[in-house]
Image (cartoon, rainbow over all chains, first blue to last red; front, side):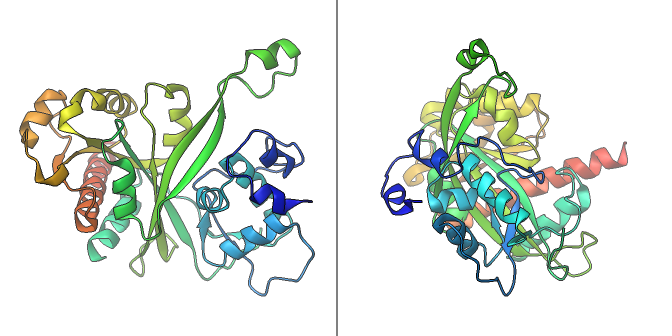
Length: 121
Length: 202
């Protein structure tokens, strides 16, 4: 894949990013992903031949990283980043960085812990 | 699915709303631990399952640009959440009127919102305020004081926006990190109070 040319593309034109996901507009498997989902690259990441953009995602996700941040850093639409993340989750090269259940956004215990963390910061 | 098992980070989505020029980008930049990023999203208004040519023609797609920033915080030990960190994910969003149809997806599972206000363009805040009220999502109003300019006090803004009495209104300087953090603390405090109150009366 001629990814060098794609990277030099300044804008987010309708055609180029979707060429990098084989024309898909949705991931093969969703894994409940949205822009806020956090993922992380597996430790001792195996050396497998991957398209350049997959390696870029894996490099970004050495620390927990959201789908939105991946999209922003690689300057691709969030929809495209979601598909790449889903592909890498399927290959077990990325893992969810949130291992337990996701608390509801109005869960008082969760909110109290976040508030306390912010105050301590 | 395998995972690390030893370390878990929870996301906490926060919406930064407000009219054009109210300081959303600046605020996200001040509150974030990373240089703020620009994210783009293509949003489709119609169902994705329409496969007739007629259906395709009826779809409307919009590209929406958002500011993105994050702040990673350690959680206290023994927090009962099974996680060690939280990542506050801040999304600075374009005005609600043009993108009304996509806001529900964007605000889904957000812990709360901050509506930034430029008192010179107070009416810009009506649309986001009305939206969060209707969604019963906790929000605070932060009056961005550009260059220390003080034209209205927070009580005036509260009245002018016809806010419910419990909605906090505070001054901020969106360029200053401590000021942006104070707004986030106020938002979480408000969200927390509301959640605890509704938990008790459930």
